[in-house]
Length: 288
Image (tube, rainbow, N blue to C red):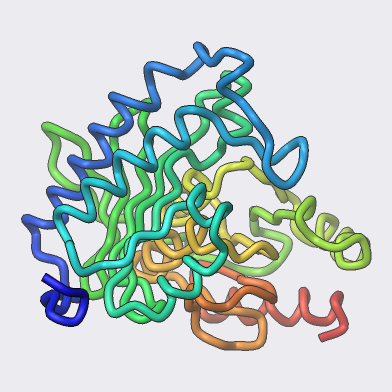
């Protein structure tokens, strides 16, 4: 069968397909990730763009296993993994233009994972022409996951228990908020400009793990996330889950999220009013 005659991929996932995707991620965690946690040898850890940008044998092994399984389940779909994108940047553009694409971060929070900190996860998203239609944030340590589709609620799920519907916080004034800002990934000038935000917002943190940061946002435990690095494997699933939990996620210039955008700031917040308050404060600081 030639590429021209391959069946067009369905762009709405069924419950059975979602169940299969969950099982794929859980199997990869059991097989490729957890056996290597706190057991990595020196030769199983290397760097990519810099000394803090790590990749391990768990990352590459889990991504390969997940990608193979998804390609069998959805033979017409594009598959974009963080590690494969590092070797071929064109894959990102192809995924953003695909009718159906799956985006995988096999070990989100690799620095934490490589240093024995049990704060890492697996992120899986499905997109339609760059817009998220399914997102999953999986914690291998607790074996539970938060997920959402484009037309359903944000749910927290684990084996043997009923799904729990999630909702973002009630938001409010800056002085009442807690948030996450990835200051270390910003330019020096922007980082200095945003430093006073820490005085306005009393609790400003970073977990070095988008999976758990978006989980906290969907659970109402933090009020916002500000990101300057727009890797789709970090954000596509979390943005959708934030929105389906009642929140708002847009670029600072007001554009809706899509995986093809590579520059700018992405702000996720619990509601429109809080998003606008944060956006105005941040935009003023950055001179936008």
